[in-house]
Length: 370
Ligand SMILES: Cc1ncc(COP(=O)(O)O)c(C=O)c1O
Image 1 (cartoon, rainbow, N blue to C red):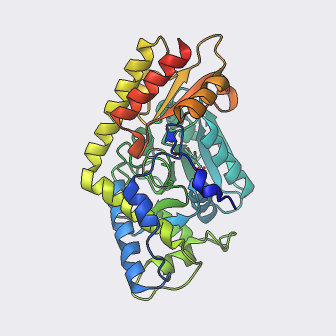
Image 2: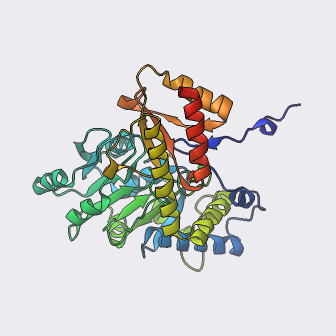
């Protein structure tokens, strides 16, 4: 009988995630499964917390990977922090800001939004003007908007919220491991990410970090967190202290993978990793422009790890992606929402951000388009 796993091809993942996975991460995933309360596994958990804190530049004790993909991190942040009728401001310039709005509305928050054109960043002065009228419990923004390739001014927005009661919530799903994050210095109180972007691990865990301010909002809730699985007040008892309490069975091998992915980043040095992303991004943009293609986002607002390229007139964008995948074994992403059919999204995330991958894609695109 055929085993479908025997026929999985190696695809160069240059889309919006997942990204390429280093061989040592695959090896880590296949190590022997330990019990979720085994003391040796707890050492691995502690090392993951330590490395996540280093990468986030935070001293936050509550820094852990949540089980589930990036969206579980998003849900966890909102469900633990929102109570019914809480005023929340969401800054939206793409799909993932919209998803935050949906999540917050489902929890009964009074959600205000500030919207910006897709492909352009959030404008901090407009946020400042909005903050004059209302005192929000949470202000939320996406750092790296994967649907457009725009970097939002997380640090500037944080400066507006410093010394206020407001909890500053940031989506770092695509930014973590690809550009600098200084959680404490920027005044970020709650942050979530995902493993399958610049951490270059398969999808399955969502790193999350809460500041003291966010933890005290959780502790002073009037009502129980309305979602059992994501309730941090219970989960933290599994991640902290000398005796660990069972909450749910941790996805053990996924943690091995994340541990190894973080080891790789620490060995290379986070600054060197960010530099590698930037250099590959610059080479890609230069190569695309020399093919006559143009970028959606203005130079100063571009993400190195997600490059949105305008589709030239008359080109069948899906056919190009199909040929790239079938003949060249390269995956790139399509546009979403209002950008569907207008852009391709080229990822240079984590282990994918290598000069040989940039050259391989440019060569393939040239052969297909000309
Ligand atoms: C910025 C951002 N936020 C949230 C998510 C949701 O993460 P996931 O698909 O891992 O649940 C994604 C996924 O692409 C993302 O790019």
